[in-house]
Structure formats: C-alpha cells, structure tokens
Image (cartoon, rainbow, N blue to C red; front, side, top):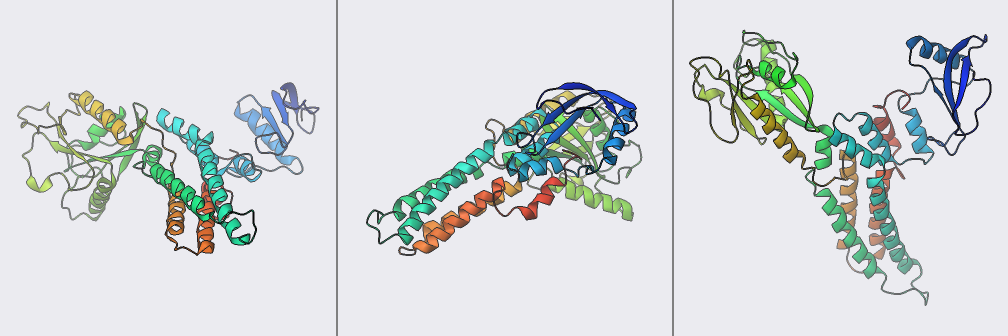
Length: 408
C-alpha cells in the first residue's frame, strides 16, 4: 500500500494506494520490528487523515489483504501481555486510564500502568521465594555440612515482615477502589419535593424530566460529574411513598435500594408542604444530608439547621453554591487522596488477602513441620504471582480484556 517498507522506527510520508493503484490518502507510516514494539511482534502504523471515507477505504483494502483481519477488543494489549511486554496490573491500569473521567482517576490509573504496584508485588514475591529457598534448603540438604541448621528462623522472620507490610497496604480503607468506582450520591425523598430539578441544577443540564405531578420519576437516573477532580455519580430516584401502581412501586423499591448502597444521601423535602414524620430520612450507614427545597416560594416553613442541612431553591439556584461546595469537600474527604493507594481492584485485594492467609498459616505451623511451612510460603508466592499474571490467570484474562475498546 505504501510502496516500500519504512526504516525501523522512522516516520515516512507515503501515498497509500489500493490494489488498482488509486491513491487512498497521503499518510505517515511507521514500522516497528519485533520484539522491540508495543506488543513484542512486528507492527506497522498508518497515520491517516481522519475523514470517514478515508478510514473506511483503507480498512477495506487492509481487510482484503491475505493474512489480515480486524483486531478483537483488547487484542493488542493482550498480545503485549502474553509476550511479556507488560504485566497484568499494567493492563488493568491501561483499562482504567482509557475509562478515566477525572484527573484523580487519571493519575491513579497512570501509576498502575507505569508499574507502581507491579514493582512492589514483584519485590514481595522475590523476598518470599528467598524465604522459601531457605526453608527448602534446610529440608533437602540437612545432612550437608555447609548448610546452616537454623534456616527456618530467618525465613519465618522474613515472612512475618512481609505479612506486616502487605497488611499495611490492605489497611487503606479501600481508597483505590473508591476512586476507581467514584462516589455515588443519591437524591431521595418524598414525591414532588424537587429532586429532579435539583439534579438538573447540579448537573447544569436537563438530565431528568421535571413535572408538577407526583410520581413522574419512575426509574433511577444517573449523571456522572467531575467535582474538583473527583468522580461523583449523582442519582435521581423515584419519590418514596406508599403506592398501588406496580410500576411506581418498582421505582420506589429501586430508589430505596440505590439510596441504601450510596455513599451519601441528599434527602430532599418540600419547603412549602407540612413535614411528615413518616417520610423522614432513611436509617442507613451512609451519611444523610437534609436539603430543604423551594425556599423561593412564599410561606415556606423554616428549614432544618445543622452542618448536614441546606436550604436551597432548585428553581432560582439560591443555596446551590453552598451545597456544591459541601459536596466537593465531602468527596475530597471520602476519597482521602493524600496518599496514593496501590490496591485499585477487588482482584488485587483478594490476591493479597490470600497471600496474608498463607503467611499466617506458615507462621502458625508447629516446630518440626518444615515441609508444611514451605508449602504455605509457596502458596503465598503463587497468590502474589497472580497479581502480575505470572501464574494461573487464564481464567480471568477474558474478563479483564472484554471491556477494552476495539484494537486497544
């Protein structure tokens, strides 16, 4: 298509032609012979003009060439992993980087992709293998004169130090997972309190339908926000009340379920209607802020007071700045970003938890059972190997790569 192969890793301007010699585009071409490429295999890049017709024509010609096919989702990254160019935590970091919505998420994903966690995990694994080698040397060569008879003691001391270090990493209050998933803020309360209007005001767009009739919102509506660099999902829920309408009843059930799993609940009440004790904020683990809406209407009752109480008007915007500032401050405290977290996925936490469990078992083994200690240290090293993809990861590869974009 380009006439000739470019020099390795040097950009060349070329006219791309189809099988009939017709010019498709004038593009930049690059050639990366393996193994010094992104995937470890031979790779070519065509930097085209971005018009749809140009891209479609080039893809059509490429698809007609023998031996070529379209890449599967995540295939380039998977080939890089399988050829040893990147480890599994870097793959997950790349996936998170592609999906990052905020600067805080981008920074965390880039740390993962750059190998911050992999380097630590590999250091732990190397120390474990060294401890395991000492135990096995004592087992296999106990009759050799140059093998010390007290190898088990330093090996267990090293295992105990590793256990303390990994336990400290796990005691991070799940900061990494929180930042990756984002803070969910549920807007809940009785019908017609202005919940949808409040969501639209905070989101600064018409995300939810607003109506003076009760029960307009039937399903859960989500809006993703960037609050001072932190990812926040704002959720508008159906008005919580007793109803015989099966559709609205399902909406109420979903509203209660979503509020129960949220990290923060904004309980919105109508500033004009009389208070109903039966419709007070829900009892749950997450903090509940009381938002007294419609303060612009004459005759409104005095709103609630306190650090977790706000008086606003979703119609005029009065009081919304104070509420937004409070949400940003809460998000900063909730993510607690003063120290980066190594663990960003449930898979990481599970593997490290299995490592700690194996080390606990090794440290609890009675004297004289060196073979059992060696087996537990081997299991701990194997669990750490799963973090970076060294062992037993075939069953999770499809899960990790299926969410990638085509060709990534």
